[in-house]
Image 1 (cartoon, one colour):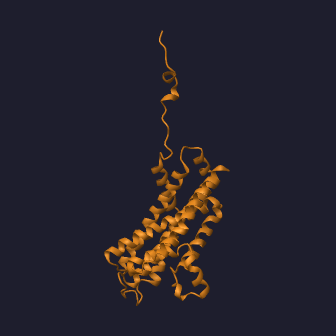
Image 2 (tube, rainbow, N blue to C red; image 1 turned 180 degrees about the vertical axis):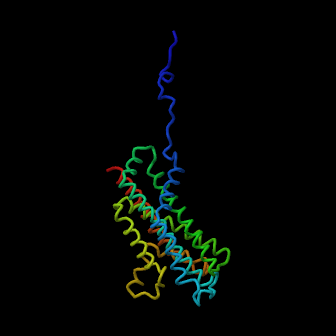
Image 3 (cartoon, rainbow, N blue to C red; image 1 turned 90 degrees about the horizontal axis):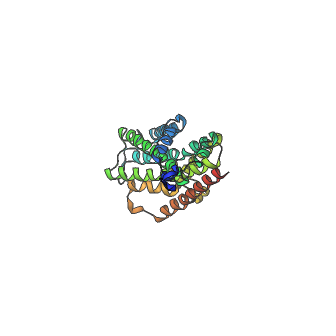
Length: 266
């Protein structure tokens, strides 16, 4: 008489544990496609920065004047590209809000996908879209007269791309906290206000005394000045810019994780 052990007769014993990060590549790819396929979001992130650069940077009398490592047109280009990347990164809010409305985010809570994997996939998708914005905007800038040293092109692009992480985490947090019909307006309002206070459109020295006072405490102040370093030289580097960026980025990450847990636990 043949005997069988429990492991041999139990069909579930041969199942292997599913990793909480399994399928992360497909999850990221689909999130990226959702961002690119949104014409309004992609238009604001790409077309608007190029339009602003063409208006204030390209073809102006002062655009060919040379700073330390770039001409003035290039400094406008980097500022407008940073603005576009902030919108691209924050666009994660709209995707997440729509997934919440459709119930997709609740379905993820029933799968082995961890909160960390979910947030990571959205971050990578937003950063990937930001990379597209940088490549296209920089290409248009070069074709219309923006000039930098080779090192400045690379360094400024990397710093601007890193800025996408800050706006993406903010976008994720707001996406989990807001309804889909309000997320787009709110996140764009936050980005525009933050860009103005950081000095992306108007130099802080040209602002009134009140705005000069509060500008250093705004979310994008530090990352904006860090993005300008490759153009004007690293001799002007200030640790306060790094501290400002970190002081906002870390709370954004914590808020995004908390908001995601709060949403799936309801």
